[in-house]
Image (cartoon, rainbow over all chains, first blue to last red; front, side, top):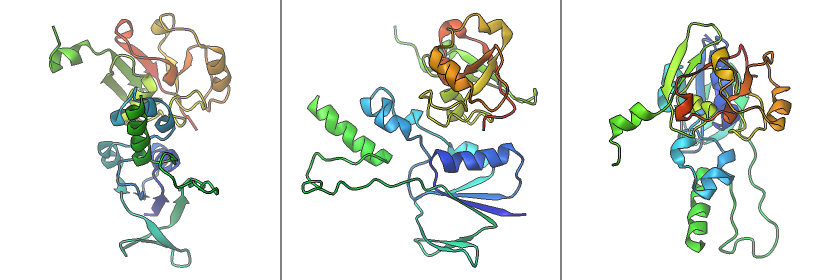
Length: 144
Length: 119
């Protein structure tokens, strides 16, 4: 039995897991996400969700029940701190590790900070995760 | 008079998804106005991806609408036609991107067939 570790639970990571099962992969699948939240869809964060026309309940990509039905182990709130390719292991920030035969890095990108003075002033937002979208949404609502 | 929870579920349009193998069938009560793609993803229906989140920027929520329903849906618009060209499985007359099909009362009982592949 082979072990597949997927780092990142955005649409790429989640779909890799689901598609592996869809195509009959029978090995272990572990999906690691530094986000505490169950996997969610990001495009809506800057659209419907931000406008307030839909809530968190419509953003789910991989409900816990589906993950369990498909035997996908989710490790939420876990950040990968080291990648030991010679030992085929990823090390998590809590010190534990996960061994793999196949490793998928689906971490996406990170936001580039605005390199100008004042970029850290209140009112300058960065939008990538659900927490930031929620913050921006309430800030916009207060101004409305 | 406001509906209680049971009445609300009773009034929710049903959508049935038939797997590409023909055997796996899932029927969901879908909130009015929710897309057939979104309902599938939220409920873990195997065979619908919805990679772009329903923004008509991919073709991974491709479905074949059951023949008896095709005439009752809105027509595919130009963007959907273009995106469908990217679909992984063969595109047929009854092909739709399911993010563009919203569940509603007069589509109660809608049946869609899932293609062999989305990716």
